[in-house]
Image (cartoon, rainbow, N blue to C red; front, side):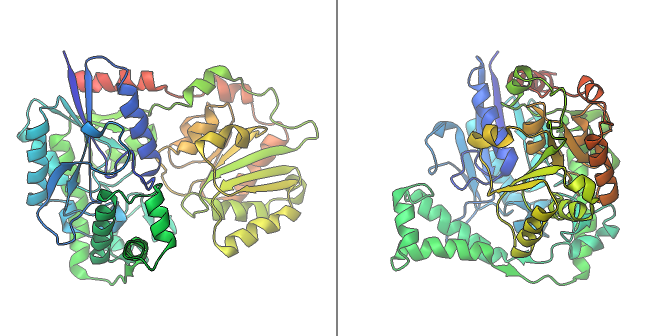
Length: 487
């Protein structure tokens, strides 16, 4: 029997601008992995990014821009009432329900379906009310994956005011001023509309015409392209509004109620995510841990753990990959290294692979060269360069300060048998077999103590790897998904 699957995420998995982070990488791998499966047909839908210059009712259409790959099976909702990503729609009532957008999605399903499974890899870009379409399509399974905490948190990551992990939204009041600055939705819609028009005309990132227009601001197209960039950066000030607190207080239970009523399964990318989802009211019987598949899994079978993580001279080579952001723990890492005892700091080589940050951040990082055995900064990294980047690395650092679902960088290093020193929140600590390399989030002394344990041979690496989780291959992940799709 043929299995027909519809996947949804807010951004096209072949997006020219590379938006969507790890979820887009996962969605791209997933779409391509299904191609080798006979009797499986996959379609993809996105929403929240394309708009008409003059506005208009939400509608669906085949994607007419971007790469040609799988063109016939890639669609989008144009003029969705919900902007994407979540920060762009922060506080929008349409995140909960918008009849016109929900009708457009229903019409899309009727016209391109029927589908056996509709799998939402996110709800950003659509009203959560689309889940109620389960009633209109009773033979279709509705699946939701939690790659972030969007149904629980309007800015997705339970990270209060870009400063601390959020454990209490204070009846919605804490949400009102959670973002230091909000985007101006009028400017965002205009920017999206201009980008949509340019892309439909074949002027998209990576093309010669796009490069020429950006270089030549005197031309109309060049001015339009530059305006898109400026408008996306425009922000509106945030002010405390009493009825906004009421909105946020109702948003979370409304979304959770729709998930509980309509979803056949909610797939969580780590046990930690499943525990958090349950604590906020999602029914335990529909929650399942489903570690995502990764192409990096092959490295796990092809490599062996090092007998000794220390170099012959007694030094340790650690690596931090990702972003120089507070939620990812980079400022904390700098503080922890600044406070680390001299005798340990001078035995530590550090590689930082992250896009160049603010001048103050860079100054602090560079100042550490005097304390450490060595420090190398790589201005970001790509999948093609990760092998060279990780050559000689003994320890991966994942000092996240928020409940990071399961960072891709953790999987990439773990798959190469690089042990991980992680914080005790988020899903990364589940990869190792013991808690010997887990430090309290934000605790510099505990972080330093764990480093000292490694430097002094007090960590049983055999036990760490004996109980470690093997990365999930894409084939094994497809098998797991089928149990939810057919079950």
